[in-house]
Image (tube, rainbow, N blue to C red; front, side, top):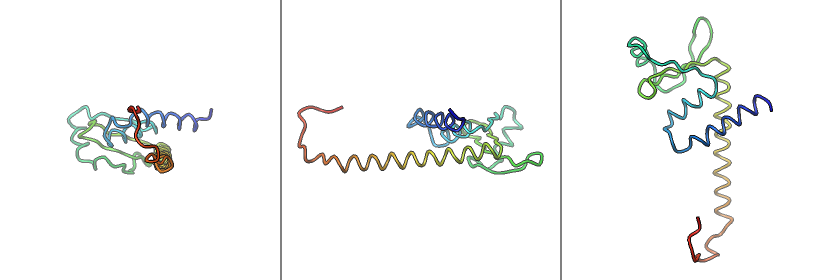
Length: 130
């Protein structure tokens, strides 16, 4: 099993496990972590003040010691900062595309299933189906 296959499998498992149980921001933070971003807690007053001054809940490219890094600040949710490299960002982008494709395929399959079954043709059922 290749790293890519394992990463996609992990991502799909992560998505299935998080459906309906977290906010969009929390899901994004999980996706960032799965892509390799490092979480840094704002565990001092200076860090908390700096975190609050950053643009919130948006991936921002910036320079750190001459290298491109991506930063995601969340002072209200996790009170933390996610930092990732260009490679982490590319992994995150691929994961987002895969998730979008999965969501579109699921929606299409549900629409086709509902339309093809013609439930009205079968009339009423004697007992509930669960």
